[in-house]
Amino acid sequence: MAEQLSAQESISIIETLPHTDSSEAGLRINFETQCVSIQGFGEYATNKVQVDFVDGSLSRRSQHKHLHGEMVAKAVGIKKHPNTKVFDATTGLARDSFILATLGCQMEMMEQSNIIACLIVDGLKRGQDEPELAATMARMNFTQGNSLHYMRAQRDNELLRPDVVYLDPMFPDRQKTALAKKEMRLFQLFGLDEESNLELMLEAAIQFAKRHVVLKRPLKAAPLSGFRPSHSISGRSCRFDVYVAIGL
Image (tube, rainbow, N blue to C red; front, top):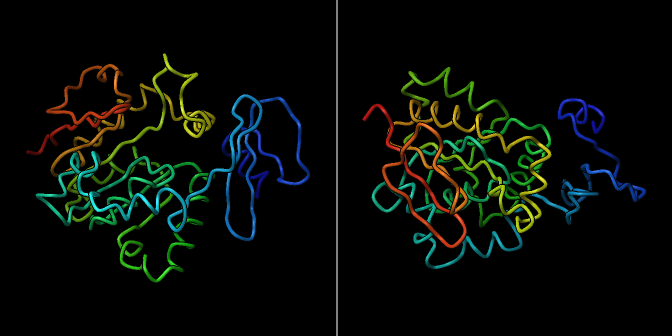
């Protein structure tokens, strides 16, 4: 399986054991009893990265009493529309999808990368084994695929069109690469930091969403060429640009 993933992703993948001291940038995918994880080495060295809805910081974050006050919740508009259907077109580690599902959103998630999809499926499976997460997990549906092609193909399908499309390309401001979180730098191996592709995604999302599109960006990043958000919600290190769907 590792060799197959390596060929499809065009990045270096090695077996977990024994440990390697290779200095070349690459990725290790770990299939372990408790979970599936990835780990960068060389230039992209990280600790193990996994999708985890049960333990750790994400679980604690989801239990916060002020969860409705999170920027992503405000950008999606949960207070006014508590049962919003959201299409997460760049699911990544599914952290924001989990928060939105916890708040009652119906999440349709899509990720093209075979490796990241493997992490998401593993995380969902472990989450489904926890009774207290049953309601949240029931609101999270994942499909592996190409979000750009999907949005273009289904933009006239009223049954599949979401209220909101959420885009989080998970890449840092190029001027602050040295300060970027290690997990985000690891995702550069998947080629997710292409601005031109993001513009195509935003264009398709604006046509696919019924209400609006939310795009997560580094705080000081320039607006995408040719697009102007209706408003933005800013934090200390990032902002959420909101674009009204063209059908409104």
